[in-house]
Length: 278
Length: 278
Image 1 (cartoon, rainbow over the protein chains, first blue to last red):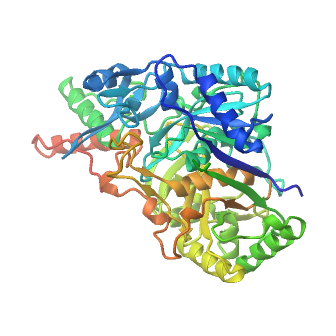
Image 2 (cartoon, chains in turn brown, green):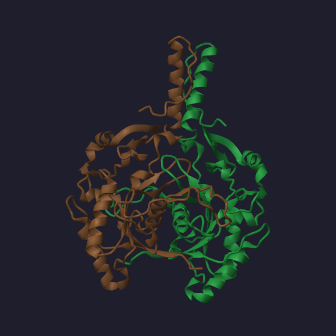
Image 3 (cartoon, rainbow over the protein chains, first blue to last red):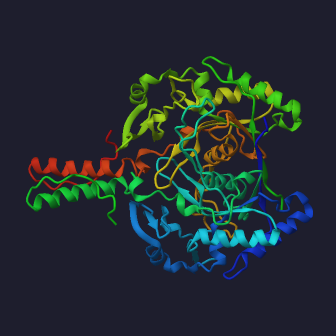
């Protein structure tokens, strides 16, 4: 049996990125410099480059004054999912215009210059396609791109990196209808490869290391055409979302609905959460 | 700058596991057989072995008759978090006695013989400690163990592997109070390394491949003493949990609370979700 194997390493030497920088050229140059010391670091057919969204945002000019942080969060937000007041302030979990559900709409003030904040790229899948096309051209190989950001999650502490943009990569392994090693139907149906790649890359990128891009080599079977479905397809549809609101928010909606119905004449309505309420 | 790098490969040749099998011996023998063909596959100091919970369950005798599936789910469940009726049946998201929130309490019927179902190990951190101690002794090196299972998640499609047990591994990189490359406070605070390791390993293990163990080499800085905090510490506390119930369930609780209070005399109570209600 062939042993499945892959490796992951960080691309060092990518400079601080400014608005308007040519990210394809800067990544390619850093790879080339690294390959001078280590020929195996040259990009090969089937490599996947996992890119921290922060440098994409910087190159695309998503900087703004940190003083406008609250206004920017509001502009990025299509819906407040949950909110909690702490001694230190308010935590707001929101749905962004990208369909992502995250704290502070992805607005970030770490790893940016003083007084500056950064929002997510406008269309991370489009950003990934541009990087994919540009780097494929530059290196003359088939490669894939995953753009990542760091997300908290319900029920488990802390954060992990997940995919917010992708191009030239198979983002899910859809095994619906598949069978296991014993020929029995698989219960697990859709493995989200792009999120597992994002986490795998974070193990070398880290948050304080200044390494914004990692190369994954050995999973060329996951490299696809540049127009394969992107990370937008990883957002769960409203109808499938059992956790559309925080518990406190949904409770409040139910409570208020009962009061309103009582006031309106005591009919007995269907006590169901309005899944599509915005 | 040193290039951070690691590699991941699957251990092939682990046989079908039965109740009472010595998992330490079976994993060690499979590693030894693999190292005959490829000396670099011998376990080294700092390696992390990522083990699918299914083989741990099998070795620990967690099999039961698939006919008792519903009874077993009830026995594993301490709390129903959310429930939805589909044309094909009922999806129940529950909190298990391990504190894990997942579909069907982790009861699985894939990759097991016909008529058999499997529950999660009783104490996955204890299972990880036994594997860690046994394999450290067998190989004479410091190694880490992560035990994984496959979880769906709110808001995003599909599933990824996460850590349900760990021993000898630093499960989180806690950067609260840390600074970024510019010396500014980090907003991202706790990277959950164990979950990123679980996902990284799944990329070679997969679901249909029959490879239940992967080796991660190159992240020896994450290997710790065998009594380092386990994966149980990754479960979010009730007080921090903004998504303790499904939206429909919380809405219903609020709705019913308002009705009950109205019946009890029209006081104006505080319309807050009972976070600790079971």
